[in-house]
Image 1 (cartoon, rainbow, N blue to C red):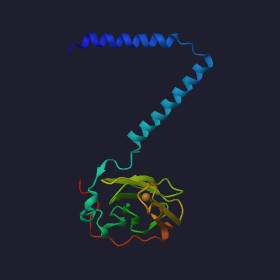
Image 2 (cartoon, helix red, strand yellow):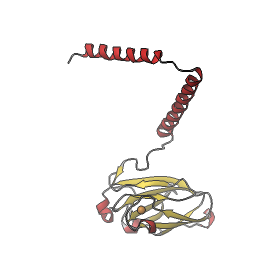
Image 3 (cartoon, protein in one colour):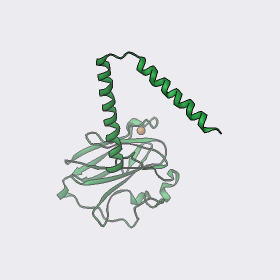
Image 4 (cartoon, rainbow, N blue to C red):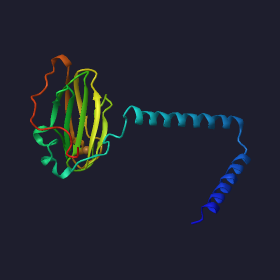
Length: 200
Ligand SMILES: [Cu+2]
């Protein structure tokens, strides 16, 4: 394929476009606002890029896949490995499964003012999880692990709601979290099952 003529053609198109753009009359004030809007857009794109590259703010799943049809055979999300766990380094991880029409386990107790890593999977269809008054809101897409890190600033009872329509019982799909003061919380007994997905 001839590259040179194509290059010339597109360069010409670009020049024409630019010339046409220059020919349009734009009011001074309008020009000012266009510039401001472009700066604001640039700022937003910059913030998103910096957050993604340096602060690890990514879509929740981080594209970690899992077989939703065999969660019971999966070590990490087997029934007896769900709920709150503390590893040797003191990191608190909460593993939960969403299914029509509940979150499992139905109730958990976590400490306040502690960094918690929630790992969610769906056993059937698309679900969502939303905890009002916190930053927790994510989709739980079947086939993917949704991971969210959050901290509850103060003790209390927090509802946990499904916010993606998942079927007729969707409005009954909720659970709750008891957040208790850090000093009153004791880590649950360790399970023998190991964390980490099957793909690692
Ligand atoms: Cu739902």
